[in-house]
Each structure stands twice: as structure tokens, then as C-alpha cells.
Length: 538
Image 1: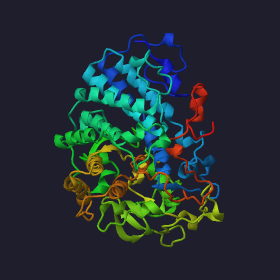
Image 2: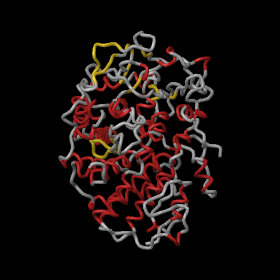
Image 3: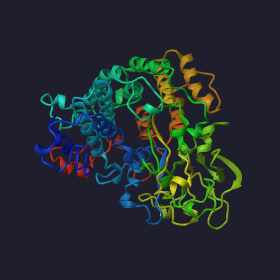
Image 4: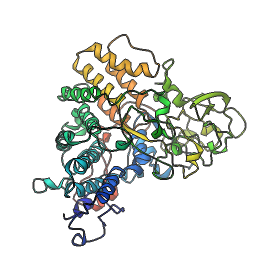
């Protein structure tokens, strides 16, 4: 096989080296035959699976959470301004130089790694089908975040220029075809041997995400999608996919409490809810740094911290929950409420992951009391300065869903909490949403909705859920799992007002073209024929 170096360069300036591709090496010097030993193939497929570990652990999370109403950026009198890389997504006022959106090239690199397997003599089911599923996943993220995207499929060369960006709808249709082709070839086994790999159910869960957002992805242009009038032709297909996952009996909402699914070393718990997850380990699979951005800034100086122990590293604390989103966690008895710090903060037990009666103290020895609303210093609506002092640090509620322990945190603040990407709970709510959008089977929709409510001990509904109720429930169930931006666009709430994305804020942007990100400067420099996305300055 001749390695497709040009494909990689067409996606952006990439600095990594793949297992058989040196980006700075001429094409003619590359392998003409891919190493087909089991060891080499397993290593290459593992490299494909792990491609986005670093991106998902920080930058992807920042781009998703900060551009949604989940969390807002804050700065501390100059600290964490970072050229407004965090405030820009919060305000939907992105710059094409923002570090939070500089990872498009990683997706292209993942596609090229997958292609090396797909174009080899490897076994179709064992290696090629999983590689194709992962390539579809990389393309999905690229399309979801940037709209038009290159379809990096060498088999299409000659039909399209695979180094050019293709219309978003065409990318969506290509992803659908790829997934429908490979789903029958993928393994149906689950368990530890298949954890974090591309199975039939992983591909089906990705297809469900594609179908639920079909009107968004196939709209004439990103700003032409209107949630109030959109018709989804794929609802029946979505229901069939969800039914197949449900009827498999491979997954359930879990025998464990909600909080344990996301806690430290959750990979040891066999979380039955996880269809596909990215594994993390503080020593051997680094990259997850949610605690770095979410924790109270002065958490290092608390003894003990609210995590129930003294921490060896500080919290960056540059992300905090918006008042509007924090207000969603208001259901009596809801297990998910424990994943949000608010009001007077108590020290948690690191074994039970529940708050104790002990009140957490700030550096002055006073009870740490977090505010619901966020107060800015000198009305700094551009940099979102809350002040670099005790009064500033306590602004806003804090998420602790991905609980921190010092055993992990002292090692470069790299956590061992695995990150779910597709969950069974999402399949239930997607089918529920499809039924409600169709206006059929209200009783079944309520039953699906109440399965979620029941397992978190929240009040059950006695009526068919509305789309607004489903939207709010998705916020509670999947917060910090990188789907809120996606949901907001589909439900027509992305241009809503939420802190600090207010119309009274002259730095906030409400242009519908900003539902997707600008192409990063580095990618444009490498691809001079590409045009910047509409609504952005190059």
C-alpha cells in the first residue's frame, strides 16, 4: 500500500508521527506494504482508538462545555485570560486563533491512521471494520464542529478531491453509508476485552447521534436550520437503531449509583451503561484533566479539600457553571444533585463520593460558600474577570461529576476517570425524543423517560414528556459529557441568553453561523485553497 501522506497534510499542520507515517518524509520513502503481523495490526488499531485521548481530555471538553450553557469561562485579574481562548467560546465570539479549537488536525490524523489499516491486507472483520467505524467517528466530530469537512476515504479519490472540504450534508450521508456497511461486520461481544473499542453497538450509537441530528446536518447551511420547523426524515431509522441496542440486552442503566459511573477508576466497575468510552489512567493513559479546569482555584490550600483529602496540585478553576444551567439541578431526591457543589460546601467522602457533615474551609478558615450568580470585577464582560482573591474564587457553582483523588491528581493533574462517549441512557432518551417528535406512543416515551428518573431517584412524570422536559433532562443526565452544545443546537436553544451570553453584553455574539467553529489559523495556512467558515474573519 502507498501511504496517503497528502491526506494528512490536507487536514492541517500536524506535528505527531503515526506508526508508519512520518509527516516530514517524502511519500516515496514510505512503506509500500503495511506490516500485517498481528502485533503490528493490534498496535496500529490501538493507536487509532487512542488518537483523541488528549483532545477529549481537555480541549474538546473546553470547546463543547464553554460554547454551551453548561459552563462559563472566568479569569482572575489577568490569570487565565490566555488571549481569551476560554471567554471566546463562552461568548460565541470565537477567533480562528483560539487554542480551544486547534485540534481539527488530530481528527484528520486519525482518519489517515485508520486508512492505513483499511487499505492493508488485514482481516476485514477483525481490523478493517473497526477502523472504518473509528474513521466515521472522526469524520462525525469534524462535521459536527466545523460543518463542511474533507471525506478522507481513499476509495473515493477520483470521485471527489479528498483533500477538499465536502458539503456537510454529503459528509453526513457518507457517514451513514459507512456505518450501515460496517455494523454487520463489527463484534457483538462486550466486556473488558472490548472496552474502548469499536463494536456493533458503538457504531449504532454513533448512527443514532447522526440520525437524531439529521435536520441539523443536512440543512442548506448551518444558519438555515430552524428547530421549530425542522422535519426529521430519519426518526423511524433512529428508533430501529435504538431498539436494536435495547433488545440486545448488553447494556442497562447500571446497578451502581450515578456518581460512581464517573468517579475515580470507574473502569474497574464494569459500568453497564457505557457503550463506548475513552479509558484514562494517571500513569499509562494520561490526558483527562477535568479537575484542573473545574476545581475551586485555591483547592490546593484546603486541608482537607472538598474531595476529602489534601491535594498536591492546585485547581486552575477557569470554568464554572452558569447560573442558568446550575438551576436545572433542582429535582428533589435526584442523585445527580450530588455532582454539583453549591452554597455551603461540605467535604466529600472519597469512598462514598457523598458529602459529609464537615464543612469545607477556605484559606482564611471560613466556610467555603459558593455563589449561584457570578459577579464580575469592573463589569469586565470581555475577559470575565471575577477577581483573584477569596471573594472571586467562590463565584459560581462547581461540577464534581468527574471526582478527583490525589493519587491521580498529583501526577500532572491527570485523572483515572474513564470518559463515556456513548451511553445506554442516551439511547433511551434519544428514542424517547424520537417518539415525542413523531407524536406517537406517548406512554412508551414516558416509560423511557421515567427509566432515567427512576434510577437517579428523581420524581417520575405522570404525562408524556415535552421536548422541553427532554431537553432539560438531557442537561441533567449528560452534563460534562460533551453533548450539551449538540443538544442546544438541535432543540433551538444555542442562541439563548445565559451567563455571560446576554444581548446586553456587547462582546456576546448571536450570529447563527457561529453554531460551528471557525477553521483554525494553522489549518488554513496548510490548506490555502480552503475558505473560512461564513460569519468569521480569516
